[in-house]
Length: 529
Ligand code: NAD
Image 1 (cartoon, protein in one colour):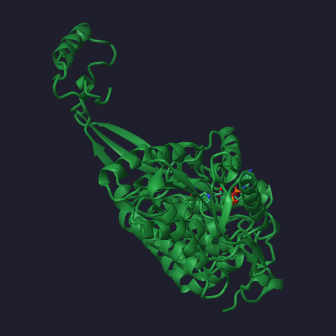
Image 2 (cartoon, helix red, strand yellow; image 1 turned 90 degrees about the vertical axis):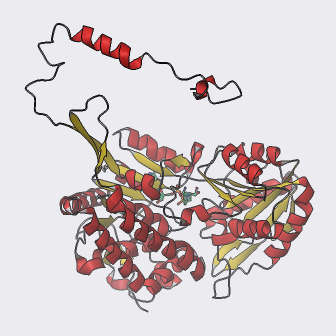
Image 3 (spheres, protein in one colour; image 1 turned 30 degrees about the vertical axis):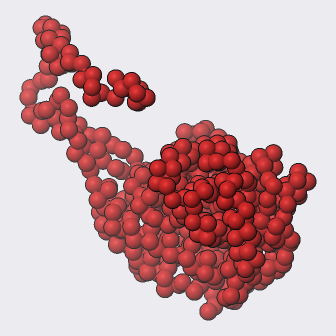
């Protein structure tokens, strides 16, 4: 499989600048991808926005079902280029091919399929009751916003670019995508796929600009209609601050410190396997990775034994027999090391891993299990984004929930147990945008489920109906049905109007709720109004 190295950035030939560099033709090997595309200038970013805006007129005018058909063409093109896509993801990130196929391409394809099926219905205008005004008709329309700026991270460079991009497109917007500077080739390849799909029809609906934070900042300030940002809390706050200057709306999918709770009646084998996969897949570089585990005292020792045994069997490498790959970049490794050394200095014990290894030329961290941890340690409080699995012993489920909620993050959480009553209670008490029961991370792969964070883990939702409406603006339309000469409240005001309305209101609103059926009268701990 051969492909040329792509290059984007400044220079002639337009703002997308997804042009092939004459020099770099070759296989998508690690070496070829060492060639970094140039950073786009603010002018490039602006040109990209203008091009996407020009494409918007035609794209937004298409019926939603026609847009959906084109996006299924995009999916077919993605599958045609599957090997190329997987190879590029692997080369840019150092993850293993299976992770790229399952966690990125498959999830993207399912999401496109779900929206192709449901977006046309969800985007249809909805009639609502006109209330008192029976002589009016009322409807809610969901209209596109315009050009959406998408800024994506490096850990899942395909799906975390494609998810906001395709959702915005389904809703009738066009897009400027800025992929992470650490994984630019995946973003460029995605741009190429959009340009190719359907024989190049609607080839300009996605523009790609490459570069780092400055380019992202230029995109935020470029006059786009909305920014969909996925990345760290720190950058998310900077994006929101910059966007505030122009009141540009933002969708923020930020970091996490996801807890996993093991109740005393849990299936310990499944819980241990879930924790090991949740903590180590993608070498721990997942926003909703299992970053801390709380185990009820009575099953703690057995759970830890199982986790340590399973961790010893995880194969870290680059080839087909590997379960997990590399730490993608050195900056991340430094954070992981600092969390590990801080924990050890404060009394934590390493029961598995704990060493650095070279994986395909990238210095990486081994899958590592830590015990004797507590909340004074960075590894229990700050996002590690690496393969550390700290396990803490707790008295009971209540203490586990309290510790799980003792965090500025609230992206995802997991709970393992059998009692439905306890599980339901834990689910409702956890301060988290997503909760997986007897499972980990799986909510992201269900396209109908809205995904997003509470607290500092973000604003807004991706996926599902909520995710689609993030990229629409609501237009409320009220229409007169009778065509009378005038309305009662128009000028000049009828003399007796106030008296008539008072009388009508007294008749309509005087009744009080029934004491036995209204929740505000429930004296046994019912909901206050
Ligand atoms: P990051 O915040 O460093 O970078 C994300 C993107 O923002 C990159 O494209 C970067 O170039 C760009 N950027 C940097 N400074 C910017 C600025 N001032 N203005 C605009 N854009 C700017 O994050 P990362 O290291 O690429 O990704 C890892 C982080 O992303 C982790 O915290 C992880 O939890 C989070 N994440 C969240 C989700 C989610 O869905 N909630 C998914 C994946 C990753």
